[in-house]
Image (cartoon, rainbow, N blue to C red; front, side, top):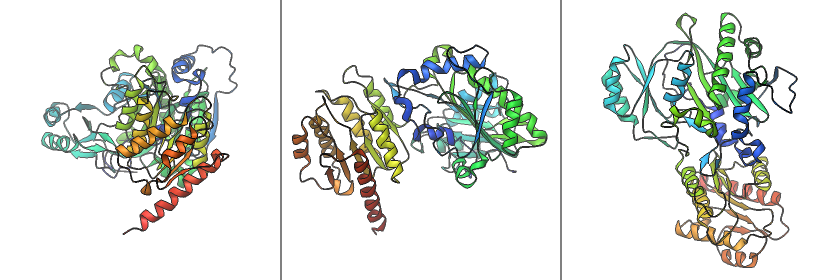
Length: 488
């Protein structure tokens, strides 16, 4: 696969699959403390350095598994905010690549620039053609027009001026990354993440393309394997995986060795996610980490003080950020909000019933627009209001499920009153937004009275199951979508 580094068709600028699945598969961030990344991330990486874990026997060096990476393989990649911070701190591209460069890994030379003048000043750093990329933590930047070619200092300044201030896939562009352009002969995909019980590697010989499309068109092209934390990823084990991905010839040994070294860097960074797309072979067979994105454990940041300036502990998404800020307030319990790629909003408690409803919506063909944790009801509804505001401000929202198993001590009327108040404040026409409420318990009669007469709000009868409520919101949202699409 030939072509210049930096082409603007979006095929290889910005890692996509693992980073995107952070938003789409964050459910287990709500699990008990023994599953929290801060408890285990450093320990797992230390095990890779040779320390024996307690209370666990691992029988195989690498447990291989090939198949669709989109089939739920990333359900346990933590992302949701916890107590005002995120469970994954995403480093920007400049910081990620500088870390990899410091570990002796092959990374194209690049610098960050916050203004056209700074980009123009990089003339002393580059003697040839460059790529100017919006420095935002999202994939598909090329498709969004956020990757531009520049052959000289003036073009770099012009490209920087056109990118800074823009919004790319929901993220405000505050800086760009200027990088040397290289000719690419072949592109591969490589990622590491802490998922479930052990670290995991994902790789493919089909890098530089939309990785989600690969999982649909050719699932076997994505090879996945758990990594034994006792032994780490040896070059021999990595070569077996690349062979399964269909790589042969001189590139095999180089890819295996680089994969092993990259995993060591991932552990040393206290990483939770590292995605390389593309891992490119340039002229002369030189390997290079062209696209790189890394998320690290916030509880290990004390070991990396050099990252404090570039690692924002708050989400970039403005709605996620607003809820994370509200979560820092001392009263009212815990609130969390993680935005997903769907169109059905979920106002749920965040425990098992919330996760169950999330899966139910998916099973009926719907797509959740978010997952959340809402605090117990109290006189202070600030955090509940923040979550509701985030859900209703999502421009992709087409339906809403308010679903709780049974409110034993919490009053239902506080939740419903807050919902009604936010709907009225935002002047939302519920005729255009089907809402299903399954909320039983104290204050239920008052709750039902509050929404009586409001169009398209369906407070289901007592005895309605979570499954029935989820099915209803999916069907109502689908019907509304059909009407919306048919409208002139």
